[in-house]
Length: 498
Image (cartoon, rainbow, N blue to C red):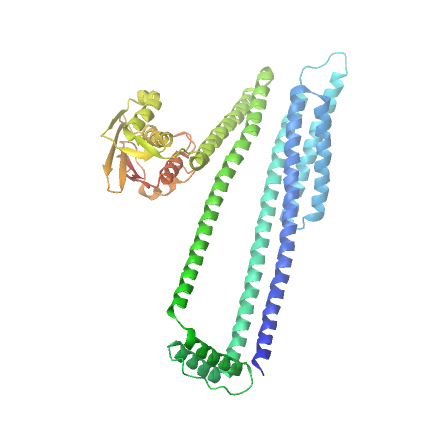
């Protein structure tokens, strides 16, 4: 069998492998498409369910016919989505969640419809009712609970569909990898067979090429037979004759230079892509956090409006629930503001310029003056150097570290000392306190965003302060860490390169 024929066979095997891979990809993409389509349906159901809640609350606040009509319209849309979901979901778990969600929907629709119809009858009478009756309030409470249950079931259905999507992706990747490995093995086996049948002639050809490559361009490879190896041997002999006339070391040197330049160019492109990707991620975090503000303000405003307008009709438990809702919205807004601050460190920072660390520490202490007076803290510092930094971010860095020392204080009045040491190429800053300290195993966890070592009741906060500190230090090219003994205080270290 000619080498060309054997290579064709190898090509057929490779093409078969590619076809199988494409087929497996097609099947995998189909499964992923179905899962994504189901996820889009669940997302629409969650969206319509949330809109129904807003329209229901609007009707309770103002008793407008428009809100009632739109609520009924949204209910019909959600009912159609349930019918469509019945035809798409075939797994028992999804069907069970869908059935529970439908029951909750039917309950909320029935209860709210009764309230709206009853209230409408009261409005058409001689004396228009200014509020809801006790029976209507009971139905409203039951409807609200069922609405919460409906939202929970839809969220669980969303998680289930999301898991199905991930499984489809993993299964597709496994199939593709399996076929790729099988194809590679088949190609290796075929190549091994070809190699063994032609080993002797290829060895002779390789030896001749090696001799020529060593500089003996007068050597000639024996050309026998009429297959491709013979053609290759003759071509090698001809190449050796031409190289004898024009071979120079400059060619190899130029080739090596070209290859290195290509590698450097690829590295430069990769670095640019990485920087662009980081910038896009930071911009996404900023936009996403900014867009979350409006719905939170709306939730807080409507909840407060509900409390003010129906204050005389609400019992203590209802007022307590409203307080929890408003408090949750406010805390979420604080978290979002912290996330905005975190995302802006890399995108909204000022250019680095010479700044006095002593002045920066003074500004941070002044910002914390009320807390310092409240805790009777004593803050001292050594002579601090001038560094190249973003002054506003450096103030935030010291303010966060000093603020943490005040928050996590021990039984004694807080004592905080700030110092700096010249480490050659960088300045090492130290903030030492006599607080409750930190367990050594949390050395990495405390610098991760939203990671907390204590409950909000013990020490309030969002858990983002030290993550912001780490990002500020890294933006300046430095490092941050701590040394602590529980119950005997902690010392935070960070470096600023010169």
